[in-house]
Length: 483
Ligand SMILES: Nc1ncnc2c1ncn2[C@@H]1O[C@H](COP(=O)(O)OP(=O)(O)OP(=O)(O)O)[C@@H](O)[C@H]1O
Ligand SMILES: O=P(O)(O)OC[C@H]1O[C@H](OP(=O)(O)OP(=O)(O)O)[C@H](O)[C@@H]1O
Ligand SMILES: O=C(O)c1cccnc1
Image (tube, rainbow, N blue to C red; front, side, top):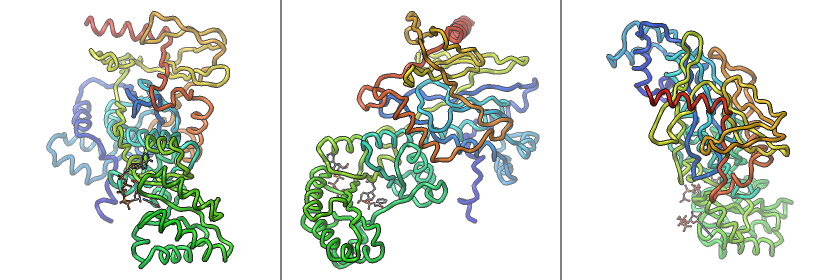
């Protein structure tokens, strides 16, 4: 086994987490549990929503968190940590609780998507690993969801592995892209590891290896007569690729009762070429032959190509999906929001001159409010355990315009966070990847306003506060500023 295979993911942290943990370990007074929230401040690509992905890997990570002998020896070599602390690490396990939105939840800015309630050292040590998972997978799931939306019901397949930022980004990116709505991946390891359907066509090298294009097509068709998707742009799409594809269909496939499944275009003007190709295929009776396109696609190029009348059945999307190229940083952060003192959680707030950077303090609940017809109209922060009674008209506060009094009438409220880890162990069944993906689709088709899903100037989802929560936050702000 190589070093690469046996790395311990528990070591995936920033050094300061360990130096702080060592410091806390040597503090004299007893430290009680603390609360950390994970939230983000901006949707990628100036979008109106994001998709929460990566929770499953966080649960696996906290359940398996441990330090092996060689990890401890490495820490010792840094000459930063006491022997007592290093001994303590030997039996260390994460012992806290984690509340989180179900994976696949449509999420918005500034709401706690994950809340960790744990001993201070436990909560501090997992910061980077938790953020890295959420920031990567939520970014790619959100990008995939946008690309799938642009494709308007046509299949999108992940072609990204070769352009990914190395292997983990390819494999977990494929998982996230599947959650976001792509139908398959070309990445075999992701297919094996997560059960994602795999699919693929052929590379230019196949066509170029043979002396001529037709010979290359014939060799493929003899091997895989039921799934022939021919790459037709190696020499000349309209003069050579498509005529050879039609010839293959007539001379090789049809005589054995098979159909040409598809062709792939990977260069040139994809709108123009797809229209021409459709006409040629239809004229040859190949109306069922699908047109697949690829080449540096994303939601913007896909939308443009379809707006130009491109006759396309499926998209292969690589680099701009797997790297979320147009806006490649998902800025989720990990902030302390309460500290237990004498058995009570005391809220903490980060005050900033930048209003968006003022945190939401305390242990809290997040509700999604649905109108009578099931549309998600706002999210609501409440004090943890506060009663939300929607039977009457419900008053709430828009924190951006607190002078405005608004009411929900005939609405229902759903609590979004669920306990997923208790005392360091998973609670409940692991949801299947398929069910996470279905959940995304269900929300986007039935609950989330299309106005929030459009690419240009999407509506901003309201994040409101109950009057009691708002009052607690304002009092704390006032107290903190005047200390
Ligand atoms: N009709 C179209 N409208 C908008 N964008 C398009 C259209 N056709 C192709 N594109 C996009 O334009 C870009 C063209 O990129 P590029 O110049 O690399 O392709 P190319 O000219 O086909 O060359 P190559 O053969 O090197 O891939 C790609 O992002 C592609 O998806
Ligand atoms: O463009 P992407 O969205 O990343 O999709 C994946 C690309 O990977 C392959 O190209 P290849 O690596 O053979 O190189 P190419 O760009 O020269 O075609 C394929 O033909 C696509 O063009
Ligand atoms: O199967 C394909 O066509 C494919 C897979 C990965 C990258 N480019 C193309």
